[in-house]
Length: 245
Image (cartoon, rainbow, N blue to C red; front, side):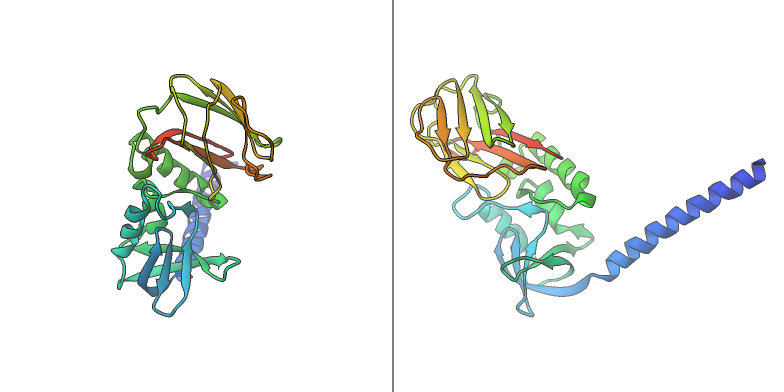
């Protein structure tokens, strides 16, 4: 192939790729509709003026009485009465829309993660890197719900997602009483009683001892990807670990 033909081919490919990018980007933006938020139900759910309810995709925010709940809700409350853009991505089993919200060129779902007000949850494949990078930065800077416990780094964990158990090793904490262990969803286990320096948390039912604790939930850990959070009695972060991202 001569140099002129090579240049022509290269330029053609570049314009083709750019054309596809702008086509798909424009197509995606064209699916966004203007809506008015009338109520922030919590940190990841809003009610619209047309009575539709939207559950924000890719994220999970703290539940009531958990550290960070009010802050996440207040973030969305600043947009009450405002016109924003909604991109519907589906409908969940409770009838709520699954969607992405945009305001002032800000992707609100992502901003919640970036500000430490939410953690990633069932992130779509095409946005996985975007959200996980934002979360890693929030963890690094102790933002919001990622505020570190004095015991941060004192606990190690290995998840066996196939056989549904986690092996914990405590390296410097003298007590783990009332510490909370959580997955990406709302599954929580609160430690009580004495534990060994190395102990196992099994998802199934059983009789707990110092060496083995039983969650009693059956299946907890997803096979593809999931996250483990451990918080102390003040709900400060002790350990964060993720796989599959």
